[in-house]
Length: 586
Ligand code: DGT
Ligand code: CA
Ligand code: CA
Ligand code: ZN
Image (tube, rainbow, N blue to C red; front, side, top):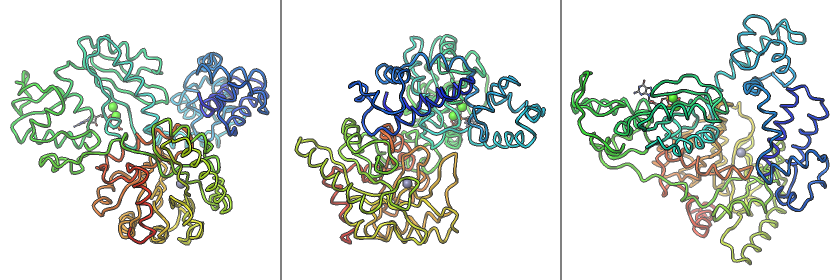
């Protein structure tokens, strides 16, 4: 485990102890420990290996022991037991705005409230208002907080859904009674947010598979369990649906439950137009709903279903009824970008601003992943809350990066850091750094981080003014949206795309699962105008390198090919492309 993962666990232990009513000094020790680790500027594994944990201020013996266990074994029995000693729903209560550990503890002890449903019931009966220290106003706030939570908590960020779905799929795949299995639904289509997780399995022993599925350790609650399907709530409070079918039915069930609903409806209509009937069980000869329908033919794979309906295979990401039928009829579907084709990310942060990794750690991680380059684009001075850099610090960072690159060159290593900045687009449309400084940097990303409430015309003007600067290579997170959290600011996206096309500015597909910005629905327009895409991690931690894969899934939804994406280029070619806009050939 790395320091961020260990810090997260210490933080959670602190919260769990607070829920148990442990003495505040003990709780605080864990929270301070978490903070001490977060502030660490070298690798925790190294500190542990060299026995230097004791040198970090604020870590007592007990904490050092636990950290060592987590780093070396990835497990901590103390934490697991602590977690198991409280109802799993209590932690969900903490997600309600306005509910902290103290209030949750009181609700649990005095009213037995251990999950959201019980909390809602207690509020509606007025019991919460009567508790000491709560009152009518607090109860109203909780109800309001719950309404907000409901609106967003029924949908989930893609990386969280994947983090629970992948181990479950692996478990299913390893079960001897499972013939074929796959995720389906929005997860398989790489939607930007996920309602619930869907699995489709083929097996001769559905009951065995269903029994096994609902007993997985990640399963918190069983909502429904039948002979061919089950629905459960898994970790993170996400619902997961499983359908088990025969192997002959598998391709049809997979296609059906992958959706989207709109895509399915169009598929069914194509079948009807050919005198056939398509559903989750098969493709049948008659359009009638008969008792014993005659199967047209068996299909071994989804591919064959598409063929029977006169279509080329449609990759799951494109199944949104967004033009895929017209293209699949003529064999004109694009060859979509693959994440393994990416060679690096051009928008990332380090400990110099609000990132968690030092430059050396970044080199180690990204080189280890087999990437070729990684741009360091820390925030500019106006983003003071993100520790934006002043010009002199940017120049110091350029020197530090050149030093590292010289070392890498000396070692004969094929990996380079690129100097850069994520420069703020100010309210005036001016940039936060002057052109002289920007011209010294290899990669300039320009983004809006303030003034979100500006009227649409003004915001559009601001952004267009920024992309017209010859030093700006990339427009960062165009709409500023935070999925499930903050709406995009008002901006005329088509006008901005047109300006990027006119100036040779690339647009970022910010691959952070909270953003996926520019939205996939607009990439077909952007590429039709000749705009190139950069799939950027906006990494603040080592794990964020994994966003390259998630971002590519969303890029595929936007019909993007290798030719549309800049960061597939090898370093030399990338540098030539970066030089183009400045020299006026952009
Ligand atoms: P989600 O879960 O809201 O993120 O989105 P999906 O697409 O995963 O939707 P879900 O889980 O409700 O259903 C999975 C798939 O099953 C869906 O994409 C298409 C198919 N499906 C579900 N209900 C219907 C329906 O009423 N008609 C049709 N044609 N297909 C449906
Ligand atoms: Ca779903
Ligand atoms: Ca579902
Ligand atoms: Zn940003």
